[in-house]
Amino acid sequence: MSEESVAAVREAAEGLTRGISREYWLQCAKEKKFPQKLWDAMAETGLLGLTVPEEYGGSGGGLSELMVLNEITGRAGIISLFFVLGSFARMPIIKHGTPAQIAKFVTPTATGEGRMCFGVTEPNAGTNTFRLQTTAAKNSSGWLVNGSKVFITGAKESTSMLLIARTSAFDPAKPRGGLSLFILDSHTPGIEFQRLNIDVLGESQYLVFFKDAQLPQDALIGEEGKGMKYLFDGLNTERLVLASMAVGLGNRALDKAVAYAKERAPFGTPIGSYQGLQHPMARAKAHLEASRLVMQEAARTFDRGEDAGPLSNMAKLLTSEACDEAVDIALQVHGGYGFDQDYDVVTLWPFARLMRVAPVNNEMILNYIGEHVLGLPRSY
Ligand SMILES: Cc1cc2nc3c(=O)[nH]c(=O)nc-3n(C[C@H](O)[C@H](O)[C@H](O)COP(=O)(O)OP(=O)(O)OC[C@H]3O[C@@H](n4cnc5c(N)ncnc54)[C@H](O)[C@@H]3O)c2cc1C
Image 1 (tube, rainbow, N blue to C red):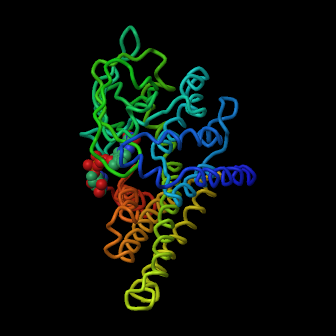
Image 2 (cartoon, rainbow, N blue to C red; image 1 turned 180 degrees about the vertical axis):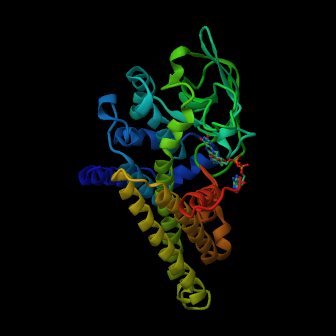
Image 3 (tube, rainbow, N blue to C red; image 1 turned 90 degrees about the vertical axis):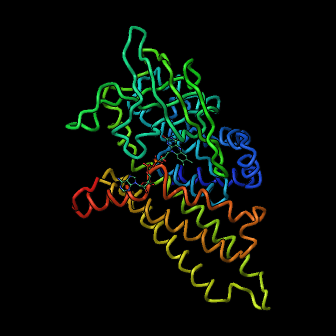
C-alpha cells in the first residue's frame, strides 16, 4: 500500500460514482439485468484490476485500495457484490496458481473480458464449509465434478469460477483437509444454473449443479487437499472489505436520513430537531465512526503483517451492526415514505441486513471472538 495509490483509487472511485448513478444500479437490480455499464466504467478506470499484479495486466494495490473503493461505492449505493466476491476468488489463484492459470483466468477479469464467481457455499453444508459434499474425482482426463453450490453471485454471468470441492473423504481428525481449489470455465458442459428469487441486491444469485462436469488436469490450484487452507488465508481481507462496504452504505442511509429530517416538518419544526429521531441518528453516526476506527486499525495490523484476525472479525461485526442501525433509523425518519421504493430507503435494507449474514454470519464472528480472543470453549 502507498498513500499515492490509495489516493489514486479514491479519485477513480469518486469519478466512478459521478458516472454511474444509484438509479442505474437500482434499475438493473430490479430488472435482474447485469450492470454492464458499471463494469465497463470499472474496467476503463482500472478499478476492475485492483489487487491483480501489474505483470498480469492488473492495477496492483491491495487491501487498503479495495477498502477505499468499496467504502466509496457503498456510500454511493452502487456496490458490486459480484466484483467483490470475484476479487476474493482470484486472490488464491494469484498466490498459489501457475503463471498460465493466472494469465488465462485472472488477467481477463482485470480487463473486463472475463468475470469470476466464487463457488463455496453448498445447500446442505451452509456455514459448515468443512462438510462440503461436492466432489472432484481424479480420472484420466483430469477431474470429474459432481454436486451443487448455492447462492453463487453472478454464476451464470461469469466466465470462470473458483470452486472448492472434496478430493478425498472427510476425516474428523483433519477437518480442513480433503478439499481442493479449482479454477474452471463456468460454462463447462455438465454445469447448470438456476436463478434464485433474491431481490434488490444488485447481481443475481444462482443454485449451480455439477453433473459429471469434466475439468482438465490443470484446473487444480496449488496442492491437492489444501483448498480450505488457501481460502482461510484470505478471510481477514474478506472481513475488512465487507466492513468498508458496510461503513459506506451505513453513511449513505444516514446522509439520506439527515437530509430528509432537515426538511420534513409536519408540526412546523423539522423532525430532525426531535430528540426521538436526532439521538438515534447521532448514536448511529457514533457507532459507524467507532466501527470504522476498529476497521482501520485492523487494516493497519494486517498491513504490518501481524495477526489481524481479532480486529478484522470485530470490525466486520461492528460495521455490519452499525450499518443496519443506520438504515433502521433512516427508515424511521422517513415514516411511511421510507417504504416507498422511490424514496430508496427500504431498498438499502436488504444489502445492509445481508451484511450480518453473508459472506459469514455474525454468529460465526462471535464464535471466533469467543474462542480465539476470550479463550472460551467451542460450542459447535
Ligand atoms: C445475496 C447472497 C450472495 C451470496 N454470494 C455467495 C457467493 O457468491 N459464493 C458463495 O460461496 N456463497 C455466497 N453466499 C452464501 C453465504 O456465504 C451463506 O449464506 C452463508 O455462508 C451462510 O450459509 P447458509 O445460508 O446456508 O446458513 P446456515 O449455515 O444454514 O446458517 C443459518 C444461520 O444459523 C446460524 N448459525 C450457523 N452456524 C452457526 C454456528 N456454528 N454458531 C452459531 N450460529 C450459527 C447463523 O445465524 C446463520 O445465519 C451468498 C449469500 C447471499 C444471501
